[in-house]
Length: 563
RNA sequence: UGGGGCGUCGCCAAGCGGUAAGGCACUGGGUUUUGAUCCCAGCAUGCGUAGGUUCGAAUCCUGCCGCCCCAGCCA
Image 1 (tube, rainbow, N blue to C red):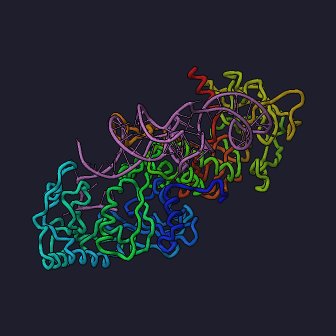
Image 2: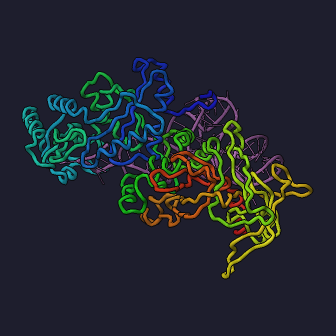
Image 3: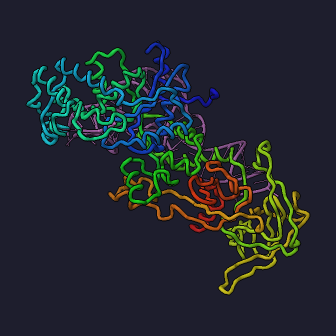
């Protein structure tokens, strides 16, 4: 990475200061700790790039992948698989450091026993409702549980019997004995273990019927893995005193530092797991990998590249401020990457026939065109030219709407990209008055040369009708029509802000022949249209539009309409 | 009204007491067989606000205002 573009943020500064001070023996160890209860999304990508990015950039630093799987009610093995696939796809590798919090269940149990022995934890028989009542409120202190003074021996016995499955769900918990009057609610004797019997955990099966809570599990898992910097989002700031309390009380050999940063908010999207699940379950989208989803799997299927996502993460930075990032920011990263790397091809989305009356019926020419206008090393492709062609309906208007219009008009000339200049001599209509064909003539002197004595401003794309291949093309737009669908000022539900035009399917697009062999996931630029990639998983030839090209003309038109 | 955070250009974000980086967006201009790309130029006398400290403040101090998070046996 060139020095002038070196990533920096307040977390990296802390890490650099720690390295300079010789803390943690100079080691840097981070972790990415998803709960396997859904698919990873763009917000996770920010955290992945932060944690794994740090591991990449500091000598000897590592980043673990750890599944925070302490709640079997919500978790599934399917998600464990998907998450690993997505992190790998983003280009990161955890080597042999794949962990599960559930790997530590026995050790965590022993830590809990230790807490009991120290008089720092007790078995509580309060029901969930009672516990809530005892907790107090934001402004009033809580009351101590009547079970708080149980003897160590009784607590030990009861806790062992909780583990043995003697008590029903919800009947008892193990709680830390801290301070019911703390202004920080997290310290009002928080729950350490709850009972959940008869569940099958995706990793531990039926070995356990008590499960440790996040706060207890996370700090100790970090400690056991020798994590130095435990990065999480802002809502856990209030949990840090508890994170520290467990480690301090248990006098652990090391004490990771928790640092919080703000989560990503992206315009025109939702990222909460509950809402994404709802979109999938209610059939509003096709699945977790629907190209309109903000999931990693959706972005991948859409044709977004790992490089674009990583660049996006770099550009948005890492801070503690609440933020709402414009969609344009992501889109720009996608365009930048694809513009540089996607080979070009021509594809006509809304075909209109052009017949070159002065071009012999049987003749065909194979023209050479660069695969990339700025990168000659990518080579060239050969494209057939013949009497009958397809052009896009949007590239023809019988009469120019204004002086800026530079596409084809009746009686006018236009350049066919990579080929000749043609003139429209006649417009053919069907009985309904619909334009069905253009009769044109071509100027043979304009292949690879400018026309003599006149300027032809417009360039349009085309394909040879005889050689074209037919494909389905799916045009995607944002899923929501409101910048903050989950938080609209009028109290409406995010479901009321679904964009009804988020998907347009074009059945009969006409493509350059070479696209028949397109590999799923390989990005192409369809010149003057946008970036596309073949859909993974569809029968036949189906292309997804990743993103349009920047469209200055559309902007001019819009401004003209508003004026 | 308790506790924890955050407020620098439309959006993101540098800045860490020496006189407001950068990206995106936007506006003008140039190149171009993609209205793409690329190139050039412009875009915060101002850092939520009011005071204070200082030769000097976005940076330090105090008050005020605004926004976010917390009362799961979720993470």
